Image (cartoon, rainbow over all chains, first blue to last red; front, side, top):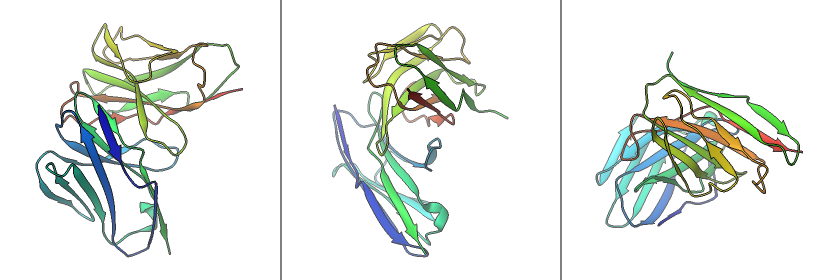
Length: 107
Length: 114
């Protein structure tokens, strides 16, 4: 089975940097996704990591350590529009989602 | 424009009634999925389909049924057997089942049972 843990909520200030962690325990691992979901809307793809290391994409970066069962999403130069939930999802036989981290960006 | 559509966006149902949620995609994807999301929680898999005329139960299939008669369409029926159907329902598709294929989501249907 899969067990995926993320913090429930985080708060950060506009312009700052925030790191959202995700730890997982799985019977099989084929990669890890991060999705962004604004309230009442569909999740949208942010990143996919299958190998260890950091993947950078503009203001967003995602890191994976398979040996530690650990990933994080790093958001730089926070903007108010980044207020959303961030979902970590692990690829085993199927895609399993964590509970999501609700990020609130304050002025 | 390619994408996934779900209708309706909001749906109200009386207790004891069955209701069908629509999901259509024109991305030419083989795999389609239905998820349920409760307030403040992640997504839980209801059913998925790898190909036309084939579908499998996910983690919370009880009280739901699906069909996959066409590649483009994967409707979900919420039956009266579903004890707590009020939720946000999301349909998704990917080129193939599982693996590292990105899943693309529709806008969702918010179902409220009165």
